[in-house]
Length: 356
Image 1 (cartoon, rainbow, N blue to C red):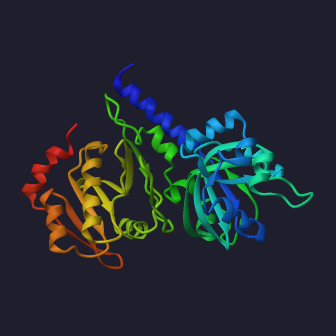
Image 2: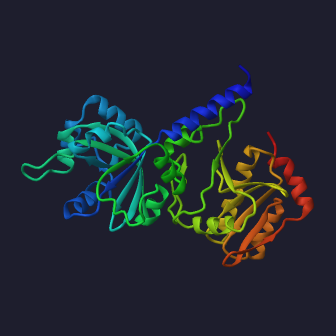
Image 3: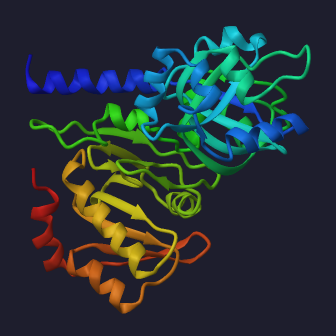
């Protein structure tokens, strides 16, 4: 089997893994009881290797939890027996959307999942005669969000006024629509791509991903090894800019991460990184990301650009131009201006962008 065949097989495996991801919709902030549970086990991490909690865990459950949460603490949520059938499908890496007050209030990634009524009752003591939240799952990541129900409902083709009254497990097209529409990239997917590990020798596998245009703003957060790309501030800018393009915008994933915008058009191939601010730290961060992404572009990049909400000061513009990178800034709603880098700088730097 040749290198191209191996790359194709790997790409298909990644695609299949992403397609199989489910979305768990979890009512979590409606009743007084659920708000207490939120405060106890979502608002903060719970040490699971101490006291009664540790006593109720099996050896296998401890091993799984400590593998995903080496610090010995995690956020937890659970489901009652009436949801056993649906929860049996949920796996590590699935996306959890925590709802309440007519919004998605947080986005999480499912970590360890197991049935353990005693552990659950220690976390969330049921009322006398009440049911245990016996299917317990930890959260690898948990990020505040502010997504109106209408946005999620449209993504999964439900009625705009759907109230998400109970727990749901979305699969197939609906799950993909939610994940792609909200631009969620889980740590599990990044691990499948090898992004959280040192690059392996041999050919680099790059995979394109669709860029959706109707998203709600989102939140970003970092971990020691990876960044889960769920971002509040840049998304409106990206959506507005892409709405002005004649060419369909995409993205690509690579061992360097997930780019914001990838374009193949009559003017060549362009990779664009968006930032919500124009300060030096933001521009420097965008520049370093672009220089990291560019060598992995599906087709050799002809241009790199930073997209920002307003004009840059001379210091920041000079920094980009020094490395042959353009600036695209917003002038007014739906209007953007490009300040191109000098041609000779771009030609010089292009050799580095396209370096194998």
